[in-house]
Image (cartoon, rainbow, N blue to C red):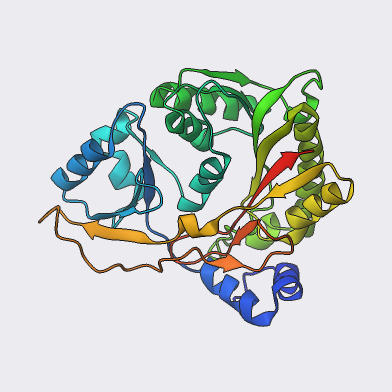
Length: 322
């Protein structure tokens, strides 16, 4: 066992998933994932981005379940930031797991959507690109510095129909009403642990988990207050702890406030082949597992991803307001 891992976290993982899966999760924490990016279709196309990557002699892979997602081989984030397509906002550096909530939400043009914890803007700009820049999004961020970063990314990516509120989403008026809500909630980050961080035990604490849990449930209740009846929202975290995920939903199910809209995880399996600069039609053998690495969940229809060489740990649920 890695001596840098907080003991209480390991005990929670064993208690919730059993020792074998807990060890697999810890192994996943130590993996170095490749750089991944999303094509910003507001400003560019997959064809243009692929052409630019090939010109720069950068090998990559695309995903079958999301053509706009690209896995970069053996290059750093700085290598990608040096590219003109990055400077021009034609791509956005984003983990594969964090792309999933928007795909599950399925934002459409002219829908009035609330993004409750929006900074730095990865999912906000993804929603705009996914809706052909035609959705109406209210993006909340309570921290002024992070809100400025959000505004910068929105402008850089050309996401034009977004209203940024420098506000804690828990304080929004209950008289508001939205067609859809994305709540990518603040969390402990138990799915994205970095074992090499020398201060891990100081920053990842039981108090952090408890505080995150309190805020998450308050945000969920606010979301349901301002989501239209019969409408859908997505709740997601980069945590794999049940108290930050399924336990919240169980309470809401018991109160008959929500019903679960099952996520078809099979839609997010199967990677395509890779392309190289030598021959864009020369597809190499896949290097990564084809399927989402899923943990067992207490609520059928939700999805919890454990960390591996390609994915971060992540939880996603689609909810319909009763």
